Length: 484
Image (cartoon, rainbow, N blue to C red; front, side, top):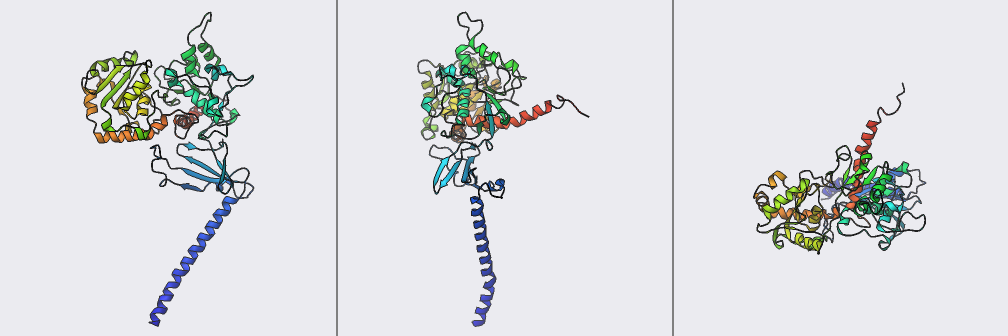
């Protein structure tokens, strides 16, 4: 027994020694890590080293939040602020948040976005108010270019009705102004810089869609309209929002090298606008967005197919008339004329929310606000528009939540209904669930939120800038003097 015990004790010595070494090593590692975090900016340790501590909480935050949205995996970068205090940079795959600076145990305060860490540094021209908020009737004090964005009640409202669907420039301008307002919490994907030499892109704050809708007609003894006059004042800019297809007809011929934010390319020649350099932005939906928790499931949507809107259109929209005569008398189909008058928008919103499939058919141009109304209603969109370009398609797979039918097939008698009735319940439910997840990407709001329409546009511009810069550099090959 004693001999066996002696052998057993000897065999345990290496194990105990190894355990002690492991524990001691972990102690040294933890101590070193804590010391590293506490170093100030005056430390000899390079600041880049301090920013390499990254924790991925993907397992913790993979469940849907209270709104039914699946949360993306957040990242936390721990470093030092300029004053030597611990700074926690919060962020995720959809954009960075403002920093939180730790003033003491459990005490934080927010700092403005760091332009060095933003995805996009934007220089915005201080154009006179006549180009932007002046079109909304805003009049500031003398020499005041911008309204205060510190508080939603102070911000001039954008006019409702159909004007609102083409309001992207309004939301982007507000977001850039907010990026210099520390009290406004927003993503840090795009930050306004005051020096154009620091900028990735230059943004022109011209509310061109509103200018077209309100001032495109010649008034009184004027020789040209206000809209034309404002366009002619613009010369060369890098990022121009012209969401309404008619909003930049005069100036766009001179601005082919600019990056445009557009609804589609329906009225643009390819040398002026194309998917290689330009950004497709969503319309602002007109119907009320349905919260995920209130979205009607398959059995509570009695209408199979829904369409309400203008039926007689020109150009590519002529297909609407053909489909109207094919579908108007079919069972489970709602295909009628509709407008914004007489509560038309509210009626359309209720109808979409109780329908399984919503038709998005080409109108005068390939795109239509109806697609984004359907997304907001969680009604599976059926896209019948061969030339359509879709927002954020480089990061969103529309086949996960939309159905596509070629126009040549759609006009065949019985094709659309046969196709849709062949969609199994399980497939519809899967697309419906995906709609509830992605619908937030198409929301314009102030302040902007991570992954909403404003944030997604800035991220798309950021991705475009690489290819745009490549093209500029290639064109510069022989444009400068060559020295031997």
